[in-house]
Image 1 (cartoon, rainbow, N blue to C red):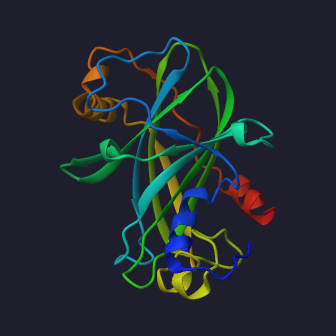
Image 2: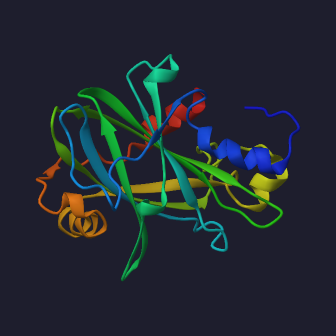
Length: 228
């Protein structure tokens, strides 16, 4: 992947499209002031996300986009970018998490992953966190997909990178191009749904089914990376 010579500000903005060259921007559904949850046309999917840049602890990752794709996506409408908002941040007794909300019409999808940024004043950096989990969305439901815990470590050999190589200096100094991701998908239904219901009162009385994503498949991710 190559980039033209542009300002660092522009390069930082590119973090929102790392996993989708051309996609449809979407707001995350359900806000703190949403009066009621409506799943008449789209189902609501919930998950929590925690990230750490252990390979470069001085850098804090900030997710900006959750990427969802339809199978064999070739058009802009097939790639959906759900933009993180202020309501997504949740600070608990053991740290900061993100409360991810995605609404989708019934059908087959790939929860492709997340992208965002994290750097220093003069060295903005950005990352791509691939998840590549296939999901089937049933109609008229609210579903919990699980808790994703992702941390970086130093990259070994040809392992997929936590972020692109370019721009060379920014990505190297911030550690995204020299590290890789370790990802765990957990079932933390009770504690996570309690946090969702506290953050979003509209979910207080809503039935939430459990459909936890499969375990992170590193081999599949490596093959995806190698094909880019």
